[in-house]
Image 1 (cartoon, helix red, strand yellow):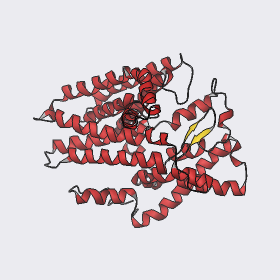
Image 2 (cartoon, rainbow, N blue to C red):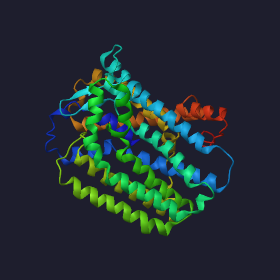
Image 3 (cartoon, rainbow, N blue to C red):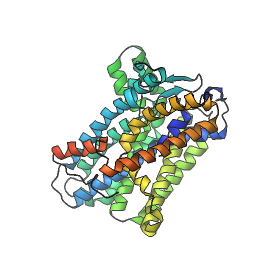
Image 4 (cartoon, one colour):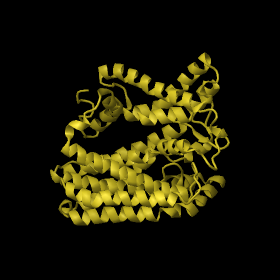
Length: 387
């Protein structure tokens, strides 16, 4: 819901280029942070999928679950390109107000077929990082859980946490390495640029976002074993370390929006700290006070078909933009009107999902996803649970 809200708000604000980005207002910095909070999806994905792997390994189920997770990761890489090139939100040079649009966004904006710039193939996305994290998690745990490795708790925690720390603290190497990606792209070395884009390109490069999955995996192992005291003793201090480290560091550098520099290095540290604290606090509270976590039904609707919404949010937003412009030209001149537009997008999605749920979200991406995995031997109850 917040993804829809912030994407449809920020990317429709007509005067964003008038903001003084050398000294942006705190509200703009806050919104910029929240717009690029896709890292929390990486944390959530790492936690849930590690919990699934660990549960099946603990039950000694004879299923090729590692293979399924690798296939899922590969599929997300396909959706990454569909999102970046055809369906997704459009990136923006905020300083010069030059949008770099996907096929759907540009075609609806111009009212004729408009193909995206080739650079769209080399942008990062949360989907690509989640997909690669799933593949990495599968390979890592296949090794860790060999020969009853699931019972070697201390070793597993040490490997995951130390690897996460190493990647996070040394992810500043992305700053000088980013030039290699730019050089490859400008030289027309698209194969090399494509490979490097996963590790180095904005907005979600594997350096450092691979570590997000490792820390959430460690939390999942603790949760599986019900090591709630260990969560308090280990994960909460880890979260506060990254929060303080990132906050202090980012305050010493000029605030930027999308530049691979030291501000962004410390920004990712800060965000990781926040996400770890959100995750662990939620787990501890839900274990002690489960009634606190009852949620309205419409939140479950968004969760059930989140990938479908993620791919279609831009198309709906652009159609609503056309209607809004016809009714009130210049409606998006203020940030307040743009935020209201984002809220309207969320409300319309709630209405759509309310009708769609009546047939179990048939023909959504998730519907076909479940059908595909059934054909290769993995049964799923994802779409069978009552709404």
